[in-house]
Amino acid sequence: MCDLLWSDPDDRCGWGISPRGAGYTFGQDISEQFNHTNSLKLIAREQKVVTIFSAPNYCYRCGNMASILEVDDCKNQSFIQFEPAPRRGEPDVTRRTPDYFL
Image (cartoon, rainbow, N blue to C red; front, side, top):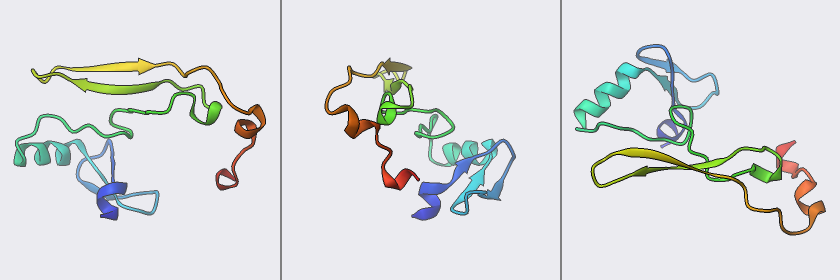
């Protein structure tokens, strides 16, 4: 399961050892072979291939937009982006950096 969740696409062909220390890297040839074997045309993941990030202005400090990938009945693909909602809550609570980010 770890290999499945932590492996990343790479510009090189074939398989490689991940520099992150978990999982592997795989090239476009591996993705194409997987798609052909499984009769697929698209692999969508939230990291590196297509970034689909669901938290706009992450932790009130990143300034990023959120997006979703919409696939209609004809398998047409489109991205919808979202700006962050207005800030709510205690400002001091959201400004403090959580210990797990240190």
